[in-house]
Structure formats: C-alpha cells, structure tokens
Length: 104
Image (cartoon, rainbow, N blue to C red; front, top):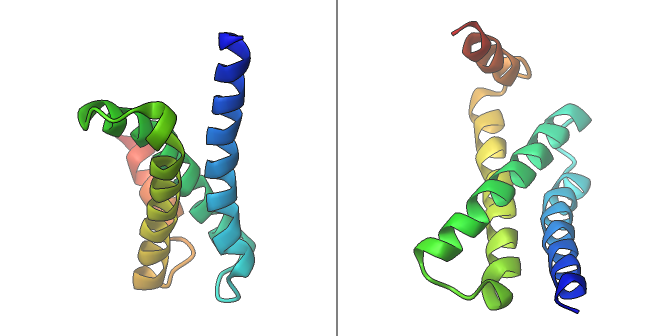
C-alpha cells in the first residue's frame, strides 16, 4: 500500500508542476510559443530541483507541503524566465546565453 501511496503522491507532484507551468503560457497573448515553452521548461526545472531541498531545509512534512511548494516554484520559475524575456525583449537572448555556456 505504501508503494501505491508514493506513486499517487508523485503523480500529484508532477501534475501540479506541469499545470503550474502550462497555465500561464496558455493565458498569455504577449509571448510566442517558443518563449512560452522556455517559460514552462524553466518552471518545471525549478520546481523539480528546488522543492525537496526546501522541504528538507525547513524541516517541513512532504505529505503536507510538497504540492504547494512545487506550485510556488513552478510559478517562480515561470516568472523568472518571463522577466528575462521582457527585460531583454530579444528572442535570441536565451539561446545566446546557452551557446556561451556550452563553450565554457
């Protein structure tokens, strides 16, 4: 029974992240699909790597706080990338950063 509970909890975690990442780009009229994809990828990435470390650091119960913290990080990841896109107003900015990073 513990395995089924773990699978259900993990599914809820990933559904929360994906829903949080997908809802804002779908509602946005200002950004292209490529920018929306970058925004969603950032949201999923940040939520997937930051949720469990924060829960452990703050000594919070994952069964109570994992979903809300994941949703927070999904929205934060989306907001960070959107801020970069708006500030630069250049579609090639992110690919330029990635290209410079790969050269190092």
